[in-house]
Image (tube, rainbow, N blue to C red):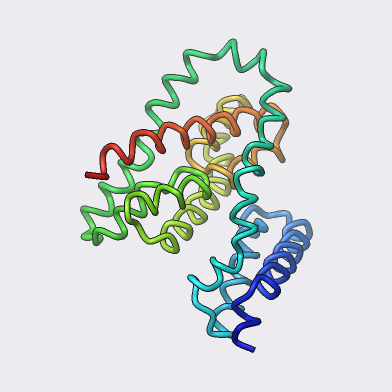
Amino acid sequence: MTELLQSPLFALPLNLCAFLLGVAIYRRSGTALLHPIVTASALVAAALWLLNISYRDYQAASGLLYALLGPAVVALAVPLKQNLPIIRRAGWPLAVTLAVGAVLAPVVAVVTALLLGAAEPVLLALAGKSITTPIALALAEKIHAAQSLTAGIVVFTGVVGAVCGPPLLERLNIRDHRVLGFALGINAHAVGTARALEISALCGAFAALAMGLCGALTAVVLPLLLVP
């Protein structure tokens, strides 16, 4: 029985059922607080706790899903291609925003945690908080951060950004979908991009662009800073 619970035969149906249930709850509620990533993660976490399955065993059994994260991110190139002329016209402003946002997002989090007395494992996990999950997990392994903690921080960051980002920018009278999408992509990565795609295809395209570029920039720079 233990071998079955720690195998893909259990983990993959568990993930699928949790996600489908999460989608149903999200569509019925209509609130970003109950995004499928949130509810599905909570359901899977509860199942792992009840069945006493370690995260390491669950991660190993879910290897197929982790392998599919990369192609799922690449698929976001579709809205980028559809809105390429608009993106080209905003080239320099996007480059400046990306450089500033990609640096400030992790720096603010790490400095705040450091001032609050956080330990080194937390600081290392926070360094990759604003990049999408497949890149964050690969970086966590490279810089010797805890992958489980990194995954939790990435998801939490994405949910907070997707929930708070659009209403905050609206209160600041910022309604340009290009600005909103780029902000969501930098600060809330995949969850923010999913939220941006619900707003408009243009918003989703700019979010996908920001998420991809921010992830690539962080993947290049962060190991140079943290790996001896």
